[in-house]
Image (tube, rainbow, N blue to C red; front, side, top):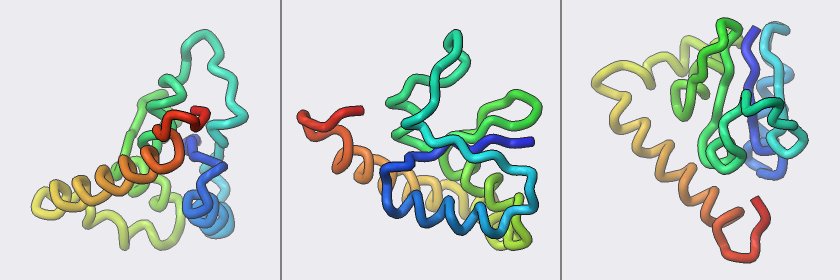
Amino acid sequence: MDTLFYDGQCPLCAKEIATLRKLQRGDLVFADIHVQQNRKGMLPDREALLRRLHLLTGEGDWVVGLPANVRAWSHTRFGFLFKPLLWPAVYPVASRIYENWADKRYDKKYACGTCEV
């Protein structure tokens, strides 16, 4: 079973998670970063979790960023629509778009100097 770590204080993230919860087949667990306890350093640091989407596979491997999103959606019947984002010709551009969006989202919400991570 995979576990998807998400920012429960991000409105766009919350909408996507609500959709995933509704569509998934019951084999994806959702973990809001803001309510997680880092037991014995088992999780990446909180800032890393907030900067990029993280998914912990059932095998114990971490998948981060766009591949985490694609893997999360693979738990739904629409997963096939996201797989092309990992194709070698598409991935560099799609990943750059995701990372630019994620950086801007993080900077706007958490890196403002007065925001709490």
